Length: 504
Image (cartoon, rainbow, N blue to C red; front, side, top):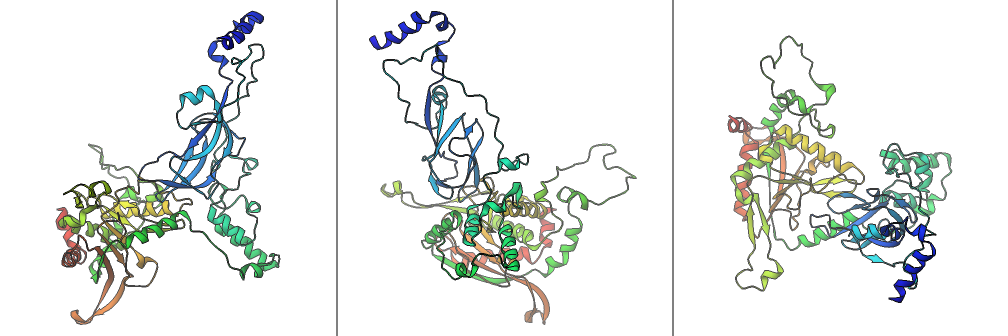
């Protein structure tokens, strides 16, 4: 009681007039505490993320909702913002390092009242106070820091050059520049979005250096060995391939004749719905009559610019027909629920199960500058070939962004029951040996390069054929079932007229 009475007595007796001017809650507002900001659970089963860029430095003043950093998981990249105002005192995880969910990312000095309201971390290093003077003196209030102008995000186009002291570049580009002996700060701003430095910026400097002979000892660097750590996405591929050894694979390969599809493809391209087309390619008709003369005609909303198409390829049609076969075969619309560790000890509950979905969900193997991703096209059976082509183009656009623009929306946790890898779009190979991973569905198919061949069974006619290579989880799919399913798919692919009859 003596410790509490002394400061109160001094407060109200020595400075009575000033003491009456301060509210009791204001006495605590000047107290500062250090808050540990932790990596929160962003869902989709993600347990760790790689910090690819910090937007702040120690001693930086931040406000609520200012971007702190960008993290990338095996699913997508996410921007993390600050939940409160304060000053960054320390960065606990460096760029390129991996942080676990629940681990601290940085330390932020905040007002004690704010720390009490926002429960996102734990208090560390509380300020030491004199026990004999637990209340601050009213005559000497702590100097209030003036309001700081809100900092712009590094990708904001309004950000001036003076604010871009932090060079925008991915860890892979930074490593590549170091490997070539180039100071990446001299390349800013780069040719990428928002001044981001791309690989071609580094290559341009190398080409100029080679031309004018100003490269600094490239031969000595080129002759040396370099140890390169696996990136976040490639390391997740490493772990996934190790887990794939748990699955017994059954392979099946054949050709599909797409000659009839090739014949109708020009007609399909001629009648692409207007809302899928870019504005400059929309057909211009004379407005002699109006479709909405008596009632507004249906007018679907235009798709995103990244999802606009100008022509169809074989892949959307193959996916559409594959979804038709999946509807006929519930086994290939099933996902596996493995035995949980808790249920193993319970008698009679150690059996895995299959969950049959009402629609055809198909994952697409997408090779990107950031690594291999498998976004999912959901409910493919209810979409048109134009809609499927639009979604594929949008996924390809997101995958080419650096860092990847794919989010949990495009990569749901449950994924697809069948995965399609279009390796024929890159190489000239006809067949492959695709690999299934746990959680990747019950089967995977690789599409080869389509080629014109002479079919001896059809009197030597030239036919356009594509090789398909299947791998199925032999724990749940029998070899005869896979063969029959592929033949069901063939009946849709080689007879595109069936789609007309199915929609009539």
